[in-house]
Length: 322
Image (tube, rainbow, N blue to C red; front, top):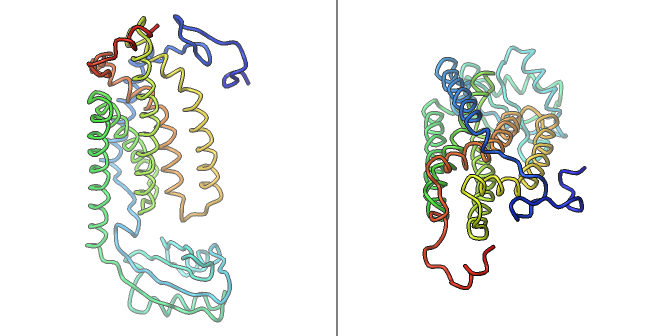
């Protein structure tokens, strides 16, 4: 229990109080660079060779909205569709358990698909109604794909500007590279296993970006604070001290979040599998990249104490520094 128990022995490093013994993270950053470069390179190769398994949101298809007289059993609906040779259907509820949306690939859709589905599901519910049948063309799917890509790149650009203004451009560069690292790894996993990607995947990617950025900002803020408070140790030691001080918070937040995401993946149903898996991979690697990509790159770009401090400092404040 000792890692996070603050009632245990107090550790000190050159006069700095730490929650536990100093961890020399930066000692292993070169190995982490090699691991990240190899991993992201493999992911890029996989994406180029295998491509992606785009869902109906991006490829187009037919959307059939149905209304059952009682809460629908989605698994039975999927089984009936498969038994009738309708493959690749996505079945999910719409707000109410009685309202079910069935999304079909373009190859399965035609003018009479609504009537066919109604006949298939009559044995499950004799009073089923077809509310609407809509066709989503490939052009709409392409527009959604382009919009998703633009949204991701625009987010990364705005984050770079924000961190450069809020902290320092070296930290901004490190944070954006770390976020790109997390996104590439997540995309690589989906490409390698050919997991279907839909709009919920885009939402998960943007959530991962926000989550990873939040972790990085916590570390950056602690680094800046320690630059102000501690004058007797160099930049690498400041980074190690800051990471050690925030390690408990980082691990506890990530682990509790991952428990929730794992529960979503296991019990949330097929409709949110891509969402929960993207979060699972992204959060796990986001925790790693905060330590070994974001702050490490800033350090190797030449981050120094004077970059993080305002030039005009109160004389009395300097005298109070240890």
